[in-house]
Every structure is written in C-alpha cells, then in structure tokens.
Amino acid sequence: MYATLMTTKSLDAISARIEEIKEELLALNVLRPGSLTVQYRDPKNKARPFLSLSYTHCMKSKTEYVRPEWEGEVRAQIQRYKRFKKLVETWVTLGIEYSRLAMRLDLRPIKREKP
Image (cartoon, rainbow, N blue to C red; front, side, top):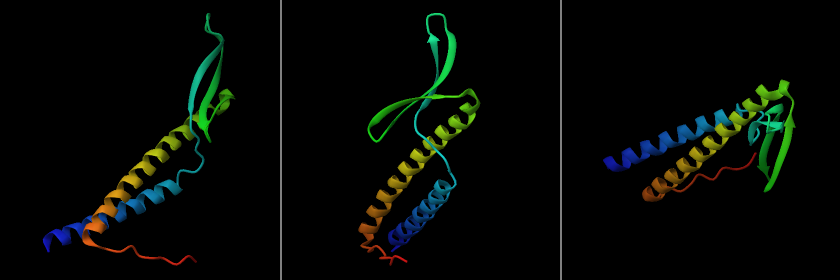
C-alpha cells in the first residue's frame, strides 16, 4: 500500500513538472539552432571580420552571414533553442518514467476528447 501511495505521488510530481516544462516552452518565443562565430575574410592576418551563423535544419547544413547589429538577438535565439532542446529532453525522460510507473500500477491513460 505504501509503495502504491509513493508511486502515485511520484506520478503527480512528474505530471506537475511536465506542466511546468510546457509553460516554459511556450514562453521561449523566437529560437534558432546553430552557432555564431567570427570569421575573417583575410584569416592569415585576422583582418576584415564578419559573423557567420552555421546550423543544420531538415538535414541540410546552412551558413548565413549575420549583421553586427543582430549579434545579440541571434545569440539570444540560439540560447533559447538550447533551452528548448534541454526542456524537450527532460520532458521525454519524465514521460518515460511516468509510463513505467503507470504500467507498474496498471493505470490506464486518460483518453481526452479533442475540442
């Protein structure tokens, strides 16, 4: 009985954390993958620098130039993307743990009707 009660509390805690993750994901706004680096048109002399954004999307590697005035915003978008990836990974891990516990207790998922 105690184990079942503790497991049910664990399921509630997992559900609560998943809801927190969902809220944080909604707040992320604009995000983008990649890394922003300084490149040089004359690398030997490190002259004429420019910003280069490199990323992979839909299995295609891309590189874009970024204007200096956009550096801060693009870096913020990259940081939000990294946070997004971490949150999704945590959500999946929690989902696996929730599923295992629910199966151990033989709890059936609640079927929700779509609005």
